[in-house]
Length: 213
Image (cartoon, rainbow, N blue to C red; front, side, top):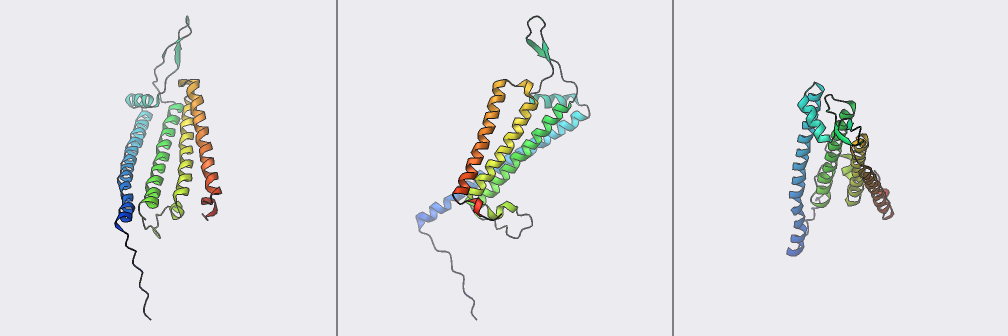
């Protein structure tokens, strides 16, 4: 019995073909995000190496960590005026500094995860298929990704990143003003409400809530 021939793809007219091919203009953007991820890898290992060196007593590494964190020692208060006239030098790696550095490393990892979702999901959704079906390393979420799913996942990832930033701020709260603490909290709440609104709108419009996961 003669096997049915696959129907060839319909040939587009010149203008629709040009418009459809314009999606490849996004390729340099995704390649740029890959380079940005490489920068985050470099930043991650730089901070981790400084932390390890500080654990073994390196004063230069400790000073570098303190500067990058914006961390300050105990305030020195003038007895006469009651004003802060300086801060005691930090000569020892404390638990608070370690916690802030580790949270910073987690923050880098979460942003890197966000970049992967944007690069892989965005390319698959808006540029071209990756043809990863059956590949052992295919991400589970990629099998049902589309613009709506990607939007919800990105909003969730941004909330996680914002939570890490807010936690870092409250651990180091003595070095921030009340206005800064208030605004960071309000911004985090705004991110949370935005993500809930996106997820609710997607479910109402028959988005990811009606697809099997």
